[in-house]
Length: 451
Ligand code: NDP
Image (cartoon, rainbow, N blue to C red; front, side, top):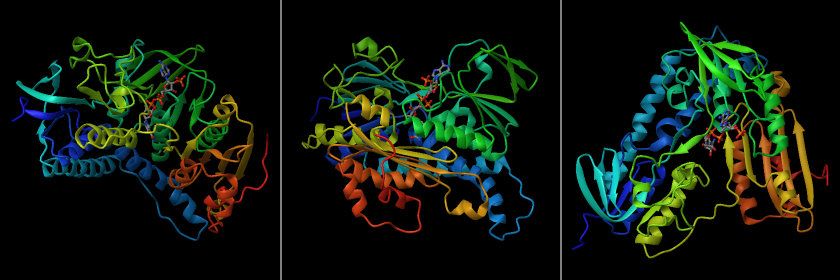
């Protein structure tokens, strides 16, 4: 009989924590999960999933317009935000229920309360003290906003999913994934959107061609992107908000959404008090096995601020459970992880940007295709697609593939297999095109554009 109540106590019932709990239970461990909010975490409850549902909704706007030149007579269309939100909530409830069922089916105990570590083997949760041999922290992150005067009048992505009405004019602050995605959502649903970004160009860290191309496409759709722009304060008068900007101008709107990054949620759970090493930004410091400096405490997912993507957290949780409870040690490879921005149009990337590859000392062949997708030859929409391949000149290995345009996330997911395998340009080219598709450009680009 173990001297602990559980073999594993997982704090946080998001995608990573739930995966770790289920796999560990499958290896025979006695497992409990504490979740203070709803099972599913950021991705399911207030992130990827509801965001993508809203993004689908926003796409219909253009679909109705595009249908006309294809011969369809589209009657008067209108959009009802409460219907969308209610249906989205229903789907989130369903997924939340599935997560619960999966845990219970795996014989994992669920404690629906905030958990605080009292010592390396004791958790205080819902007024009880529970002991465990191993602790896994998988508490995710939370939106962070700068502390400017009037910031309390703004919302974050958390609240954006529950607004009672669709704002008429929205200002979005930030230039990362969330800002860009919500700019497309609100714009597509009919709001007037201005996006403020403090730097030179949105999506810092992405390939420069992707950044410029996407910003131009977003501009064509009516999103007003203002770079090198920051707000110094926000004032509220009645239902209207006024942002005072660094160039001395003012901007008035119905809603201000801050998407200025997320902070690991490691505060207020006793970690620092136990001596667990945490960075100033709140990230729990872990090694390649997700182990903290306290031997029986591990951490995975966004609270470690490594690669903040759901599938990465899931992989980290799985590796942890196999390693610690399955006698099957393995580590997550954090290199060459594909990701997508569900902007309008979307972007998909895998591997190195041109700038990263050059910085890494590679001599490069760069291939690019910039074209009007077949669909828009008839629809009349002025939307273009960009594809780019970053190829190491000497070895001809494809180091990176980048795309902005319809279906980019789906296409990049498939390409990620080849890039991760280290395929060469010749191996890409050996695959005969599927015609007519946009994706075929990735196997038919013949001449490098720059060296
Ligand atoms: P990001 O870190 O991606 O972007 C934050 C943005 O806010 C940057 O443009 C940053 O500017 C700007 N910013 C930061 N601080 C300030 C400030 N004080 N004033 C003005 N601007 C500021 O964060 P997100 O919130 O967009 O997303 C968080 C993470 O969630 C992402 O990094 C990603 O890993 C994940 N995510 C993934 C998605 C996907 O896979 N599709 C979707 C959504 C989120 P600067 O560039 O100058 O630093």
